Image (cartoon, rainbow over all chains, first blue to last red; front, side):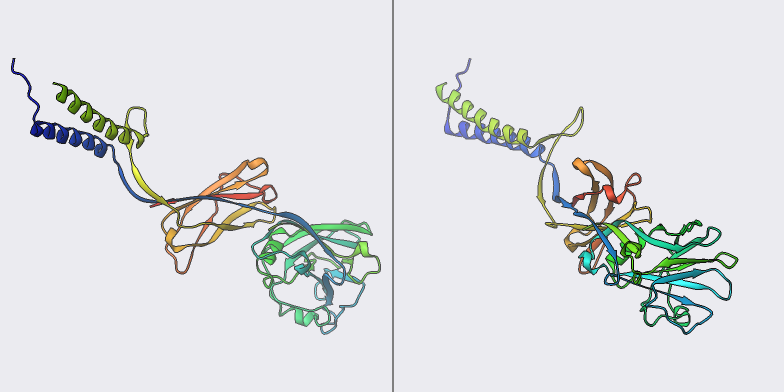
Length: 222
Length: 129
């Protein structure tokens, strides 16, 4: 048997072969996937409730088709009448600035509550339609109301026939939009599009009893 | 013979070192196959913020994530609506499209109805090449 003789050349050859095999194994295990982006994060929301009512936080009036140039901004009540050709519409709006909501916030729920001081003799359905252009309670007349823009997200509530009761309408989508864009909504119009001559009387923000004022309760996030 | 043993021992040590490197990079991706990879991982953003829209019932209709850096264009954004106790209430994803100064993603499907009142936060995942 021939005796293996270790020479520097043989050492070099063995080393080179071993390194090559090892490097080859490592290379074979390398998967080129390029440069990747990977990021994870979170955002925490703050929840709260904001309640708005009274003359400092709300504006309201009603307009009368029979007296198209008249204004009723200082009245203690608001009328909604169904009579064709002689309708009454009411308007109510709230100032959300005291809620200190950023435009990145939103409404989880929002409820408009109105107090009926004098109910119609038969229950009526009151439509609550967002107003998309500005108005003031001292300047809004029936004529001016015809020039306002109105939204499509109408909701409604029924009056019943009992006096001195509160009725509510869910207005979440409108308030959510108002929070995100404070100049996108200017309250709501209340009207009765039904037939007949029925009048519903609501307390306004000028009413002497604070608990009867129109109220907007917002459950918000920000 | 002594020199041969030393040489072979050294060679085995070198080979073992490479094998260890390869093993460290090994990733199991299947029941019968192995793969390994080296990737450069970075992030195209450091924070995200979302807003959401609701319907009149207070259910989330869409989540809007704006202000995404243009470096994230083409990547996939996953958003999970998180509730109390970090419970996942719903999730959806979208692709960051081509954009100008910054990008945005709108997600409209979350695998079910989610009440906005129950959402206490959002979790984000952003992946892409």
